[in-house]
Length: 445
Image (cartoon, rainbow, N blue to C red; front, side, top):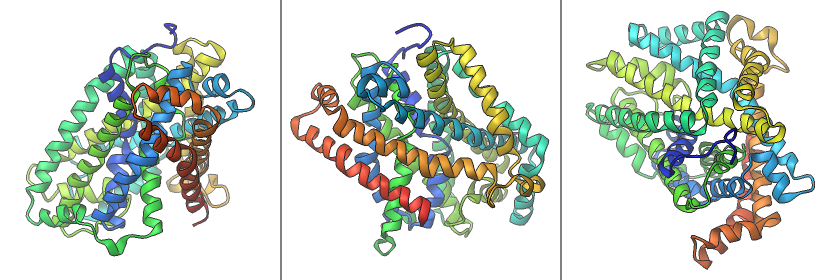
């Protein structure tokens, strides 16, 4: 591997970095409210099944594609598949570039709320006041752009430092810290009077809630949380040494992603039940409901600071995995130096996507909407509902049919024959069908 590309310095560093990609705002922000909307315990069981079937198989497949080719998505598809397969890599690059545009805006919100928590400005039990403050903040053009730029600059600074010195080093610090902070908040949440109801809601299956829509929700979250379909794991896998056991590492990553989701549920749902808040409150649980809950707890300001720091750390570990595939694409395809590639991607992304996404709320929203959707919504819809599922389906077909002998050779180093057969069935048949169903549901339901 060239110095320009880089490589992981250790197995644990790779696991923390890849888990950081999975343990982002999707796990901490999205899982609790989706579980709340879908009956808690039964959703958790279905989610676990999805992670350890389609999610894990597709994540491992992308890691093996990257390691075998020693290249990022576009170059790997071209090297292994030939023909027009490199277009699958272009799809993944476009997908993560779009995600970076709107994810940086939300990441900027987490920075702002850390400052708000330090000042104590988010500590009030008045939900209407918190909602108005949040709406006012995201609708103010200058702060929205400044915090987006700040978050993207932090992300770019880490990626510029390189795979070992930047991504691996920061993830070795942030990931353990993130889990310690989560455990602290879980313990505090479970100590609240009435918290046991929230715990039972999360772990007790309510089978009447089981439905096809819920299954598709769980599958979509599993695929999204493990970064399947966007080329992230192909890029990270390309920095792996040949001696690394991919299956073992991948299962650790899936386990950490699941633990983060469960801890997020244990952190938020018991507190929600303790204060008689609707567990299906939706995305507002993070920036509106949780501050109101902290205002009612002893040491609420400290807890709020810890909570929003946790969100910031999770956002950063994910954002660097979103930026890295585009940087790796420029390095592999055009032999551009890492620093120049990172600055070019981050700068272009901020100017072309970040600013419109940051201005998608408040007074300017109507003036820049297209067919009733803001730039933020359009980026989210195209990336999450079209490009990511499409990338996942193409990766599944590529692994299960186009390069199966290559993947089988990788699997034979670690798996018995029955496991290899199950792996191919999931990758080549089950995954494309189910991911297509999720895509149809997201677009047309």
